[in-house]
Image (cartoon, rainbow, N blue to C red; front, side, top):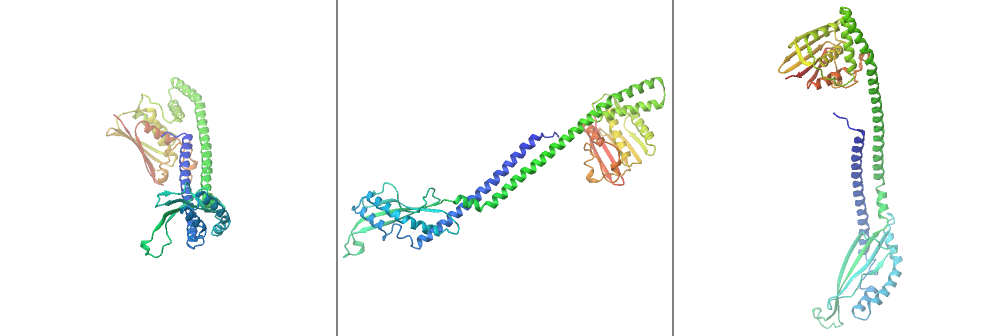
Length: 439
């Protein structure tokens, strides 16, 4: 699987982080709206109760109110609208301070700064089908002026003014004037935003802590990952440099052994030449996948490999069972690398009896290597194919190696479109089974 560039991780984090901030912001905004609605409802309820108590009767348009009497004069044609407006200004001014004091007393504990205004919006004469007002007229207001109305109430009442004749029944009275009056109430809470935000302060602080903590954690994780990536890059560079430095002495040894084999017919020289070839393959194994070659792997190659390992490890009993054709249609270098890594791995991890079986059946090659070593724990079996991974339990850490042998085996098997399986039990042994298809 191709590794994502670190910048893509940054982009993914930013997208999800902004999404999280958006969700938290929407939640806070919803909570803010609910709090504002609660404040407005509280204010409106208390003012409604104040009106129901009758305290404001003398301030609003009622029959006992002097503004009402002035309106009757307008309806009767005895006063003009301009005269009413001048008179109304003086009335509003005289009542403003006392009305403000009444409103403020309702919200002393909550410290709400409430502004209230009552307007007369319409005055309709029904008998003449005439609208008297050319614009709404303010009848009562607090010292604080209403800029934004959070709550508006509209009320209207109908008046029928009759003549002074009282010697007839009610239904026979002669009505002179029939009019309707519409009145609006406006409520503004000046400090509603600060009050709502103050009540949400714990939520805001918690949200900020979560958001900042996520940034800090991501920064620490990102910095650590970048540092580890740099260390891994340095390790890869070191391995590449070591591999490069090995090439010249290995090539020189190979050249010298070939010349010796021409001058002397000796099994020792042939053994040295085979081991130099394997050393060359070991050096090449630092590349993840070896290049293909035309030479196929033969039964004689496997027998020589087992013989050489037996000479190198005389205390280990090695055996091979060949149940295939004399020649495998597979790369000699790749198959020998796979066998050598698996066999040496079995020896390193305590195997004293190791058996290799190579067979062909059902259009596939099967390679099975079984040992009686210390085995691999169930939870470690999926990790042994990772590059540079080595089991570090008990005395296993004393085993020599770079931790790339099984990784290389897996990469070679994958390049051949095969599969590898492990069957292992602690203190009993391990079996590696490789299947590789062929045409």
